[in-house]
Length: 334
Ligand code: SF4
Ligand code: SF4
Image (cartoon, rainbow, N blue to C red; front, side):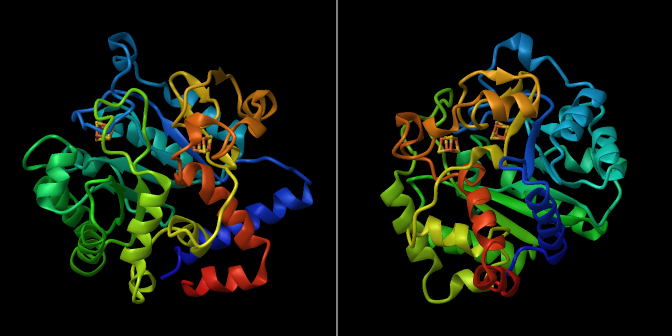
């Protein structure tokens, strides 16, 4: 099934405007990280290994909203850390929605029941719940028993309160094609979330677990088998068909990480939220001062195993919007 129509239409209008303005590099979505602290300690997390002094900090509302305004991005994905540990996260969301941004609030959902009353359903707002697999697999991924059940209960609570709920699932080399099928079937058919995002785990240098990252060929094999027999079409995946083709190895894409940049307490991260090659004060400075030709698979050893959406989904979206055939595929779900 296709990406949400409203999101696709909004993105299409934004891309047309950039074309008319003859802009070459611009953000489609900003990964906003207003804190690094978290209430969990997942083995694959590259964010919570920051120094204690940084883990204590929370980004002021004006700084968060100002950065998004300066970038001009139409969509914002708020992550961290755990955003619900930020005392003014509801105000950040409200102010972004007031500026007509599409906002995804990423959470492990453990604190969601305590904070749900601070938010209201909105056509441009969705919860993005982290669920890496079914019960045993997810609890193993987040290194804590009982979190899967808590997350599922939170999803149902948010759905019952009228919110859009999406999920984000990261796969590692311990996952089989059947694991991918089982969790996506569950999220799509049983939990009935609005859309699902998927990602091959990236080898963060700072993550405690350095053993279970997927290589490129493993990723392609995993998704090609999981997507086979028409399964891909029935899942409500929040990705363009071109990006899903890329994941299962049907074609190559170049990295365009300037399309999904990351803004955190350390400012704009070069070149993307996965690597750490310095910081820029503004999005404009990030675009102008980063040597983009130095990044992407085949260009930089640090990118060797990367098939992450922050680098390749913007390329896929641009390819989709630049082609009538791909636009029809995206609109009809491929
Ligand atoms: S829930 Fe997210 S931010 Fe928290 S430790 Fe796990 S991966 Fe990191
Ligand atoms: S290939 Fe991946 S890690 Fe490298 S710059 Fe692009 S998104 Fe970042």
